[in-house]
Amino acid sequence: MGMTMSQKILAAHAGLASVKAGQLIEAKLDMVLANDITAPVAIKEFDKAGAKCVACPGKIALVMDHFTPNKDIKAAMQCKTVREFAGQQKIENFFDVGRMGIEHALLPEQGLVGAGDLVIGADSHTCTYGALGAFSTGVGSTDMAAGMMTQSAWFKVPAAISFVLKNKPAKYITGKDIILHIIGMIGVDGALYRSMEFSGDGVQYLSMDDRFTVCNMAIEAGAKNGIFPVDDVTRAYMKEHFKRTPVEYAADADAPYEKVIEIDLSQLKPTVSFPHLPENTKTPEEWDERKIDQVVIGSCTNGHISDLRIAAEVLKGRKVSPQVRCIIIPATQTIYLQAVHEGLVDIFIEAGAVVSTPTCGPCLGGHMGILAENERCVSTTNRNFVGRMGHITSEIYLASPYVAAASAVAGKIATPDML
Amino acid sequence: MKVQGRVFKYGNDVDTDVIIPARYLNTTSEAELASHCMEDIDKDFVKKVQKGDIIVAEDNFGCGSSREHAPIAIKASGVSLVIANSFARIFYRNAINIGLPILECPEAVKNIAAGDVVSCDLAAGVIVNETTGKSFTAEPFPPFIQAIIDDGGLMKHIQKNLNK
Image 1 (cartoon, rainbow over the protein chains, first blue to last red):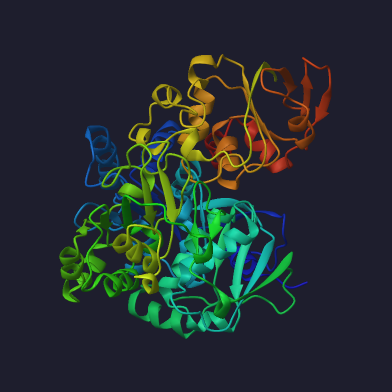
Image 2 (image 1 turned 90 degrees about the vertical axis):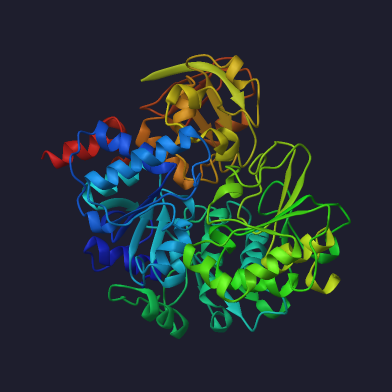
């Protein structure tokens, strides 16, 4: 019996010739990640365990992205804890305000993760790096602390579902629409404990940014990881960014998949997840006239340069509806600067949007765009749970940057064609 | 270890944002986290919960964020056990790692109502609905995970292995 791509990476890092679903393994880690919310809990556990030194300072990344620039005194204290820990432990990949970005956009950009890697992060969207052909998964703070102490972690080898992407995506169809469509189809626990392995001729049409978005939201289907095959698009990206030598793995022809699901990208429609679960997806014919109050374009899901280019394409020469507050958040400093150079920021400001420094901020109801009672937000973020962006009666509609930008202009959920 | 308490019952997909909203994640204080536990799904939870009480829920409990603050808040609020049809995977790991007892048992979930008194022998996985007299047996943990639980959580388990 062959192995899936995910299983091959796990086997290699466990020093085993092969593994199978359900097997418990101990594996070496290439990168361990935490942020300003999860690292303080990990550091507490690290101290409680009486640990003195991290195992490999060069294989740890600490990114201050959630409540930064510090939203209040408590948030500032949490960053201070992490800053001091990074200093003591000589962790060079400590990213503070001015150098930081949203972690899952930042790590690939900085070349800290690449094909063949095994990565854990104390953030559920750590699954993003599967786009590069890595096995990457979210864990809690205690697992992260253990990872810092031993540079290893235990895993239960996951079974997998194969998603075969076919044909060229239809107009306005992005990675976001693909993953929302999939979550709508299989549900928020449709891939629980499993790998989501993507393949098919449709993959060639997806940019790295699209692939990051798809893998980013694998967790919203309950998956342990999402992963793409390595192709020329991945290789070109890694050549520009990755600091180590990538290792390419591919699924065996007889890899065991619990299910094979084919998706014709040419037939997809712009997809929006209505409140209060990502699986509650609707396409344009099911949208209605309900008014919106806010639009957020950004996050680890859709704060990439290509997402900002899409937003600018829609907003150029148009105005944000007077009833709408449009908040645009480049995911990293590099993306921000690129957006400035390309004139995207001019377009946003002229359209009446605000542009924020990189932060997770509104996505998790931290700061920079909290919703009031009964307000509605169309957002390119990843979760629309009750109270996620503010008041418990507020509503979040998850969408692509095309739909989010068009909605900002229309004042209701819209595609660019409806403007 | 045997636990017993009154049941708080919830449905499918109870997410970590309603277990502990992110607006309270600017602290690692267990008591402070507990004071906001379940606030966005059940504002009376904190007022009513007593030491030993049990949460029973349907599918995919703990979905969403990796925040360990979620099982920490539940444990610090006094809850002795969470029984569900299934758990989201990061929550499942986190609960084991911090020593919050959890069991998957759809039969029990189906036959336990809010307010029932339930007891459980955690090692044996035997759940008794004391209100109705019915009993259920949960799937045992794999030995590897049971060893983490027996050692008192992941940190203690690692310390033990490092000292070998």
